[in-house]
Amino acid sequence: MQYRKFGNLDGVEVSALGFGCMRLPVVSREEKDVIDEDRAVAMVRHAIDQGVNYIDTAYPYHEGQSERVVGKALKDGYREKVYLATKCPVWMLKKQEDFDQYLEEQLEKLGVEYVDFYLLHALNRQRFEEIVKKFDLISCMERAKAAGKIRHIGFSFHDDLEVFREIVDFYDWDFCQIQYNYADTEEQAGTAGLEYAASKGLGVVIMEPLRGGKLAVPAPHLAEVFPKEKKPAEWALDFLWNRPEVSVVLSGMSTEQQVEENLEYASRSHVGMLKEEDMEMYCRAGEIFNTMALVKCTRCEYCMPCPSGINIPEIFSIYNRTATDGKNAAKELYKAQETKADACIRCRRCEKVCPQHIGISAMMLEIQEEFQD
Ligand code: SF4
Ligand code: SF4
View 1 (cartoon, rainbow, N blue to C red):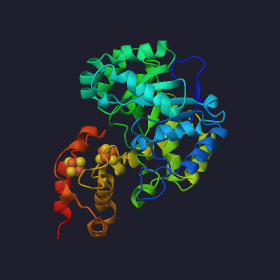
View 2: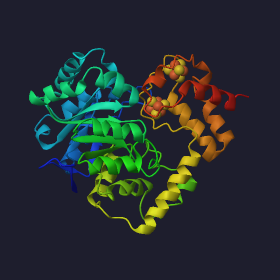
View 3: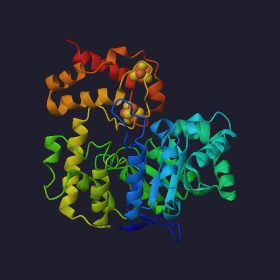
């Protein structure tokens, strides 16, 4: 394993690869929130045995079950080997006191005395103004730190560059977590945000390095941009490890094979590992990806479950395939879906939580029209 600096935090060195616990293995496709605990625990422990020292979870992952399973994985001496990160579900806070309640619940589920890295989860303009500022969550974080319940203060982010800069400047954060990959250099915080945060001394944690897996199994005309000497996932991860501003790259690993492959890629990683001509290739690949993707869904599943039973990320994934596989092939897949886009009742519950700000209910209308006979 390779280790990297974490912003200005003295004495903290994080593994190049972090284990993101939002896509742990599940017992079956039908029961997506029932984690296959034995497999998940074995995978997390194996990664730690191989040098991974950053474990990332959050209150809502796997419908609230991720933290409990992470706690299980960190028993038997594993807690002491890692930095543990989890996140305050800011959108669930109705008053300031809720902060302490959630933190206590999280510590209990994780079975730990403290977390190393505590983040205000998925900040955007509205949550920043109406929750973080209104309830003075920074004071809550500082009190929790003084009480020894959290060690370092950060936030994760889904909005645009202007909002990102504003939040970075608002407080003397230890770190931040941003969505970044070769297709998102101009999206959300983007390259400019990454550089800005690092210049201010923040450790930068990268999420969605493979855009919900789409960069690991790219469409054929995207895959052919990359030489075959590395797999597409390795090319995508190397793009991140190449940059000095990046501290740790989180991968939401779901299989033993993904863990093995990522460990191998991380062991070869270092700052400045790419050549100048490689960068042109990533630019081209990013452009192709962005013209192909009709809906920028990362399959995070925050929008699930939908009260009408629509598998929202699956419907979007199928719709996106019209650009790569053609409309007829996508339509066949769409027809096989038990609940289709026309079941949407426009409650917009999903839109309140979608970190990509997708107009989901409007998209459902568009998709239904596209695929109707
Ligand atoms: S707006 Fe439509 S897709 Fe979204 S949660 Fe409501 S019913 Fe489901
Ligand atoms: S629609 Fe939004 S919330 Fe739902 S899976 Fe896609 S990115 Fe996540």
